[in-house]
Length: 331
Image (cartoon, rainbow, N blue to C red):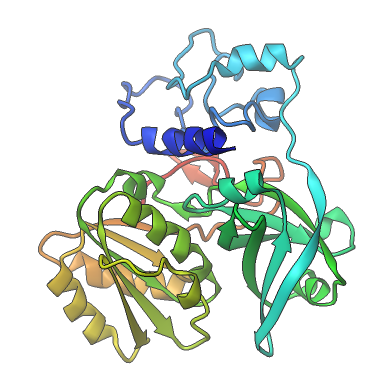
């Protein structure tokens, strides 16, 4: 298990060290968050739309970034089919209601899966005893390989989460997925610097894994938790680190205080775990700094299937449609 986790960490960290090749003619060459992992090749390779392998996309020239494996060879060895993430029925070990419409749920899973879900941007799909189209993406708030548990928080907003609220003692779980943030390369590439994490709303679930990664790389991290709303991620932040400070504010009332804090800390990286409104406020403040930091934020694109198949997360990049649940982007 430890070897598998170490390989996954090395794969994401290696993104910061790979040289960028000259821009080719034709379709853009994108990096896939799953490339080189146990879940590569995937459905897109099977359908001739692999983000990494130009040969599988029907081109005559190989121009991949070598993600650690030859996707083309693995695709042939698997008989032309992709690797499947399976939904498993997992018992609920704890659930707590913080507010009328906000619940934190912990479920039992394998130590291997829990270990894979400690990476920045990790999320899973969950549903109760309902049809598969009730799958809802949930950012991982905490994952413990030692206890074999995964914890997530959700707000009751629509049919999927209403059904989840009424589930019994088990959930269906599908994962792991890692592209819940934009700016992986910034987070994995910063070393020994001041970093600022601003989080609020349900997207604050992403903060603990991001903070843990930044601390592991020797950074000093300041976390700003913003109200209104419950600040539920505090107990899941790494404890006992002298390189971690936690500040609580109320937005938008404390924007001036946040601006002063930014100027004081002069962060090299700024991560925003929140909705579009919070991200817009934070980005505007960051742009006024003498040395604006690299930005990363919660991936706000709609996640529906997680495999790049359904098209819900499609957006345009240089005139080409891009599947944001799979493609790695810098903010």
